[in-house]
Image 1 (cartoon, rainbow, N blue to C red):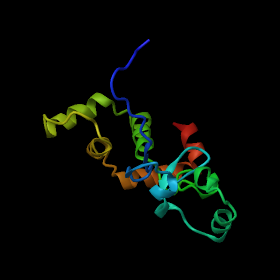
Image 2 (cartoon, helix red, strand yellow):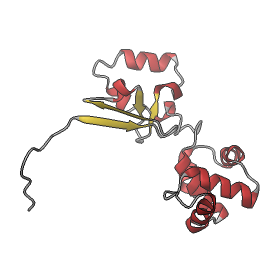
Image 3 (cartoon, rainbow, N blue to C red):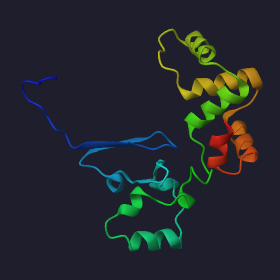
Length: 158
């Protein structure tokens, strides 16, 4: 058992990361409403700007006194579940599965650009894909949306 001596802080800070843009919002005793975000029933977190507002959403929010709607928005309103946006981590998983591009290939490419780089970011996966296959990130997204009807089908397919 570990025993900690001295001052111990029990912080109430929170941080939320948008699954679409990667933007991070942090705050002390911060909730999704303070962060301007929603979370769907499948766990996708996204900024309010990605939510397409309509009468049904407005009515659900108006009737929800406890703001619980913001924490479990139905998947039919989620821009990820409805396949309006595809998360970068899912694009990378698709690149690995379909184009058989390996992590060490991307790492070698990244190191050729700068020896100081340490962490493989999504952008390098897209650059390697474009070099090897001639497919841009935008074309990849379009291809995936044509190949799969929705996010659930996409996840099962890769």
